[in-house]
Image (cartoon, rainbow, N blue to C red; front, side):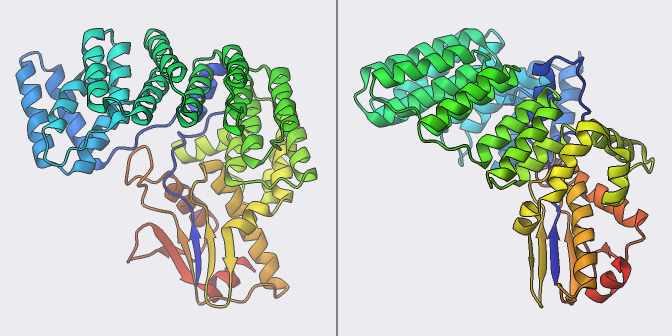
Length: 461
């Protein structure tokens, strides 16, 4: 049996072509901003809540009763799913974010509730951004009282606050929390407290766009006897990259390597992502070649970072998915024919490397497996083309035995922006139909396409 996991649980919005006229920060946020996937039950409730909140004849008590009833009758996972969505800076229901506090209050009354400092920090950051300072300070005071003198828990709470404020982009709240965290680090003799505190400071400053200030923290760390770790270096180099300050980014990479931290796949992916945010495909080509020359393996995130930045691929994929117009080339040769310039070169670098295909594909006489979970749409598309070409060659030269059954696992969309709606499954279905593939939906698992191995071999060859 061949099992092919196509990661139907994608968090990438539909493709975004590179646009040099768009501000880099906005482009970056569209590419990288995480979203809290909602269950269908959560979607229905938020739709009802929106209708009630907009109704001028409905009182605030009606809205609160609706929340109370829902929390009382819904599973813990669904209630927390909705709260996380309301607290997210990228919520698709910003008009309901003012209801996050009453929703949280009702959750604290549930029998299953466990106090969570990260959840409190997210709520504090949202309230601060809304200008509800008294309510946010009250939550902070309650949290500090609950933690009391447990130093490690206290520093982690302030770290959470710094992170949450930075994600909300709330300068006032960030500055206040940063100062409090710095005071805890100053007063502590614990190496753990200092390390966690400095990690949060550097990361938060970079998230706020204050990368120069973040790099200055390195000097303070050294003075206090704390070694700058790979984590802090990655934050700063990516921070400079997001801002388009590539010379500073490369300077930090060199500094990191001089202190014994060799650039690895994760670091390289951050650099590629930074170049991609600014449509610097030529720089991407050079870095991909450097990775191959240094024997730094590509990863799924390498594919995601590069292909998200390819304007032609993203554009034709958007047309195919949104309009139904058959624009996607269905072989690597056809795809190469429509690409040009640096975009053609970056795709060529990916195609010529088999490291990711070898990582996600296994094969024996009983089962073959291709697991593409974690891939964005562009990555799944190119990997499908590579996989079909690899199987064609492998079947012809006898490299691969013919398995009993081939299964394409697209997933059910559990981690998609809307749970249960898998963009990858839609993409795969379109490709299989156009290719006149014998693979059909599995009756036992709607997230899969299946066919006999011999039938697939005959189709491909």
